[in-house]
Image (cartoon, rainbow, N blue to C red; front, side):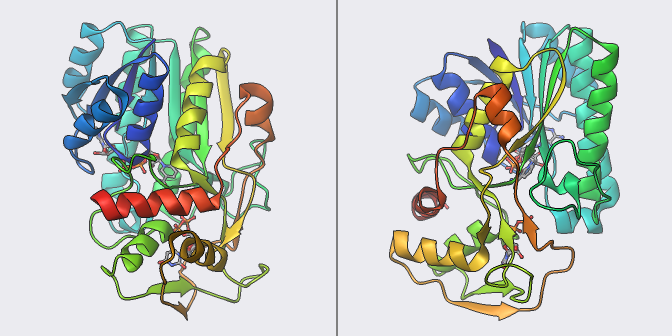
Length: 330
Ligand code: NAD
Ligand code: UDP
């Protein structure tokens, strides 16, 4: 299969490219490098021994996208390209709606035009909003408190409506929980620009001494130790989930949670990180972060049943691999 990976030099995209190449797929990466570096292509080639084709193209630019589709017989698309910072989306809603909606529409339009039968979309657990855990794919989606989450819900709708008019298409809407960790080589991983917003990259930067301490946002949630609970998933497990979706999904629209089905609190994650990596993470408990939910974890039975996929790696591996990448290339 020849797979077009938009956002393929980004965090999740790069790991998925490795998984695809290691499993016999050919890969074309399309990325405008707004949040990643060209060097990632070399790193992917170093890990796999195969070099993906790379186009520095903005997925919102129809003419440039058309040139890529017309030049290659693409069998499937995985659409990672998008802006993802929740806080920034509140500051710049129009930039988020424009980039995330338009890129999805332009890529989808070309899949229809060129008869590309498979489309895999990066959605997010954020679409569930304030629902009861565990989150199940059949739940009614609640409103989100930020434009980023709204773009994901809107893209899901656009893809579903389009697929229902194009019965030859297979569309997977993959709702990621909290991707963390890195490839075990330490060559690729998560490299946020500026001060990280997410827990794991913040922890690795504290461990490295780049930041003085972690602020734990709230210890009065109705959770076992009072801190927020999330379903962290190793990015290589997530990458494997994409391959499973590409290979196994049938026609029509299919929604899958990609998580582990287990929740971990902020304090549990800190303790595991300290034990596995033999480093100290100084932290201080501060007020809750506005917009945060107490708990977020997945019911993962549908992906297991229909795709034969389950996450295999635990929190210890996630902490170990995230720290290795931070030390080598962060
Ligand atoms: P990332 O920022 O590392 O990767 C996204 C890539 O898309 C970057 O390389 C960026 O340069 C590129 N990009 C952005 N807009 C583009 C455009 N218009 N044209 C071409 N390229 C463009 O982010 P990530 O963590 O790898 O996330 C990938 C996808 O998964 C995103 O859609 C994100 O919203 C979604 N997602 C991420 C998480 C997470 O916690 N990381 C959770 C749920 C969903
Ligand atoms: N968190 C924290 N300090 C930080 C960043 C995050 O205590 O500097 C907490 C946050 O409140 C949540 C968990 O860690 O309970 C995961 O946060 P992240 O931003 O990584 O993911 P999300 O909230 O989007 O699920």
